[in-house]
Amino acid sequence: MSMKEHAKGANPVLDEQDRKIREKLSQIDHKIMVMSGKGGVGKSTIAVNLAVGLSLENFYVGLLDVDLHGPNIPKMLGVEKGELQRRSDGTVGPVYYSPNLKFMSVEPLLPEKDSAVMWRGPMKTSAIRQFIYDIEWGKLDYLVIDAPPGTGDEPMTVAQTIPDAYAVVVTTPQEVSLLDVRKSISFCNHAKMPILGIVENMSGMICPHCGKTIDVFKKGGGEKLAEELGIPFLGRVPVDPRIVTTGDAGRPMVATYPNSYTAEAFDKIIKNAINVTQMLAQRLKEESESKVAGGETK
Image (tube, rainbow, N blue to C red):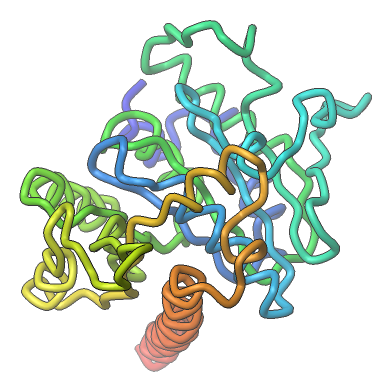
């Protein structure tokens, strides 16, 4: 069955599943899908530090890892696979990373940790929908979703299953990555997903010896593209070896080195994301109220 047929209500089972998913997610104020046009741009790193950073701003945050082919969130948060378990009633309880942050990943639901996931589109779609359906988040201010890279079945399934999500698009400064970002923007427009903004990762490197900036992968391409397309630019993150070591150690950068230049860069992105989220939420509320008022006057 096509997504178009599903949208028309051709499958009562899927429609009921959608209704229950919307009911569960209605307790979450803001959903942010972190996506990228290609892999290898640091999407999961941005998602983890965004979620941790929001929790440090005293928001209640959930972090959802739906990357079937590369579920790295448990490793980056330092949580072992055995801690993620399905309840007896079939629902999945998120794991607390801190009092303000809980998360869930598809990793424990996959056959083997080191086995390749060789599923075709319909199976991926079904697995992601069922996974989102099973999770009981409770009340949250933010849900950050680490989506698979690209514009295929997986991100489309997330976009259609969580239709009120905003998108944060991650890129690196070089042209090859920026070309793929344009495809991600096109995807968001097609899916009618509001774009929260663009993050430029690996944007310059601070030399540990002289303190000067070295533009390893160029710099400013993401900001220039955001300006060209009229999309908010949330900020840039430099290349920092500590991002790699903290990710491997399960100790996110923003919490481990809060006074570093890189943590300050993440902090700007987090504060910009909060501001733009509130602005978009207010705009959508006003548009909804306007539609209701327009319907009442007819």
